[in-house]
Length: 402
Image (cartoon, rainbow, N blue to C red; front, side, top):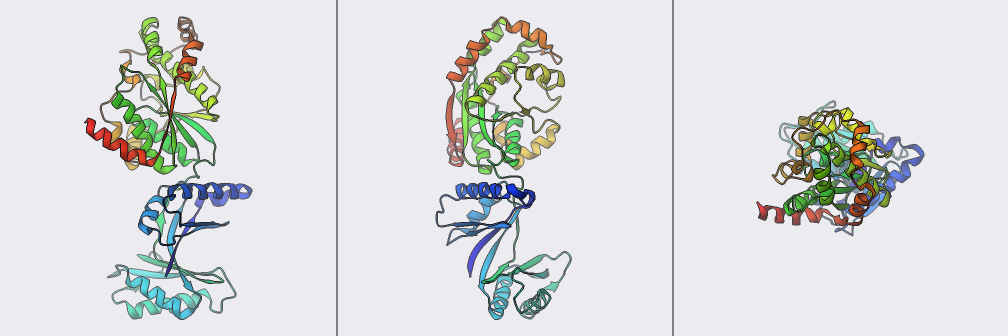
């Protein structure tokens, strides 16, 4: 039996006149995720996408599809000639290949072609009877069966499936524009990046690096965290920004209580400049309200004052355990807690202000060459494409350093 995979959209089904654009983006993302299987044929239409596997490894493709945003669920389907006896035999054969001992089942038939001679009730009854005749110790259960056999009657053939896999949901990455993610080495920002991607945002990761105060291992850790989330949206541009000069200037000239506020204001200025240079639309970060001194509402207001660009905080209302749950789900948690500190941690003051004043921050910043510092940081940035293959390479390097 020829194997296809039928992909269903979920949220994309509500997109009206824009639906075609979303489906095209999802098709491109599927192509990128399966590029090492060029024989796969992607056939998008208004209600679903078909993948003709053409002998591609079904288990590998199934595993990859589970992580692609924009897919609600999908099923391997078998293409059967439009002949009742052939289809009946195929249903029995597929059921015999499953673990059925003591389980319940139902047949769910849909006629896409209403000209077919038999209606759905007749087909359900006949296919169900064939299963009961050939497979012992299985019973019919219509409401909540263990196994649902779906039969779709098309003009050219029958499509039969026995399994449905849950997809990642959300919107196809790239369908909501581009944003830059302020990526540290911690738990929260990779989760924020994942959630941004789930809403269709193509992200680029901005990471501040302060050698010799931060180590090469800390930089590799940030790259590896980026690699971890590429499986949800393909290649991500990792933008390393030199931050040593700025942190030394702040430490030398700014009162300790305002050092964190002004550090974050400088980071936001630089990130906004990078965003403009990279033609992105918004800035994302991993701030969670009240978690640390720089994440109080008063601190956020003082820090945000340096830009009018939208700052989106996907984890702002989550508590730490909720964020950790997602980090474990996306396999970033164990890496995030490795003891390689980022520049925010290294230079964190003992008693930062939790309610900083904008006018006071601006007055302290008069001691700094704001324009020059930002320009030199942006000029010194290094852009590295990160792919899923990088994750394997970085994990190997990272384990050697432990």
